[in-house]
Amino acid sequence: MSSVDKDVSQTPTAPLQRWQWLRPMLPKRLQPYLRGLRKRTQWRRWTRLSEPFRTIFPYTQVNTTRQRNLFRLSEIIEHEQIPGAIVECGVLDGGAAALMACVTASSGRAVHLFDAWEGLPQATPQDGEHAASWTGEVVGSPARVAAVMRKLSIEPWRIMIHRGWFNETFPITNIPQIALLHIDADFYEPTKLCLDRWYPHISPGGFVQIDDYDSFAGCRMAVDEFLAGHPELTLQNFGEVPLARACYFRKP
Ligand SMILES: C[S@@+](CC[C@H](N)C(=O)[O-])C[C@H]1O[C@@H](n2cnc3c(N)ncnc32)[C@H](O)[C@@H]1O
Image (cartoon, rainbow, N blue to C red):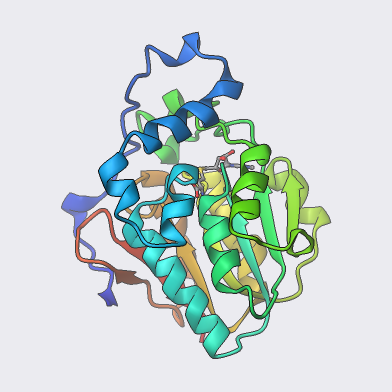
């Protein structure tokens, strides 16, 4: 584990969309199922995983290093009894959310899940040149979220679904204490909204993991701007592979 180094050569831009030409031909509601099928064809990678990573594999886009860090942070908040809920902003098919819910089963923490399930919102200039092509893409499915929660025997009363755009759902939701916040919303505006809205509610000793710090320019900008106003925080990383590592910070 080390502090995140500021290597400008690794500054991300929004990635190019693969299969962009094919996407308009596919009904959006099929996207989650095709994504799940495609992941199941990665048979060797999938079947070598231990539980609960194997069960969540077809239900998440989060890479395995970042999954392992979510697992580790979930264990720490359990072990140290850091009070508060699990919150994920950007849920898609629920794999990462199910992982955090599974590891924290013994404390029975509430799990709050925020997503519009309508694909990514409009990009802004901060998101870089390829970002606009992602708008409306990456459509998830609340039915698949329910399915992966069932597969891991997560008790339904723990799961609170907040469906809608963050700027609509955040102001009407009260979560007094948060132990672990996973931000996975790709773009500048939603990442900034998540940090501004939920950081004041993170318990001392609680964690924030940001999935796209090394993947999307706008996400990195939102995090860097936020950290510039919070000198008490140090961005840390987990994992050795540049651009695939997990980025997170802990509230003192
Ligand atoms: C990369 S996916 C999340 C991946 C997920 N955490 C997983 O385990 O695979 C990004 C999600 O963020 C959601 N999202 C992005 N911006 C949003 C916003 N402003 N309001 C609501 N949802 C948003 C999208 O709908 C999409 O489902």
